[in-house]
Length: 222
Image 1: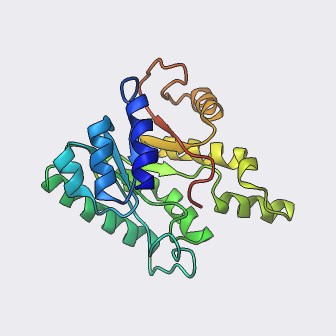
Image 2: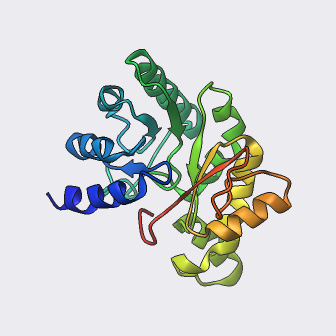
């Protein structure tokens, strides 16, 4: 399996030195990554909690409307904040009942959401943080940030030219109480968090209290 061949050697190389998160929707990959030393399962389907419990993995349940190939066709909600909150709380409580020792929730910014949905969820992060589970968020370089820049500048910048919006929304999330940020630009985000008086894991390996940063691949997800 190509995913196994790619993931397992990387996990094995890193796990002795740092906490490793694996992002997969396949139970067999999650199990193999756990055996290789991964400690956190990032689950965009929010369906692998039994595997997480079986393998003693911490688990992030993410909200996604639809599936990756179709999720952005016509996303629709009666109340995006209420629906996403209710879904994540139900998934998280189910996972806790099944024995997952560390459960995180993620509103899935950009996963089956319009521009307006994404901003509504960012504004509601304090409400999500009050559900009783730690919250993870990824806004880095996503298309809704490009759309925001296009409204001011007339053209949408490419993904690798969305630093300002990425850092600004990371700060917004951290101030709301989010405990884990998925970012591409680690050094810039750390500098901004520390300048704002928010603590983060340092890029030089010296851990401090507060927000964790999870580096992202350059072109993963919208």
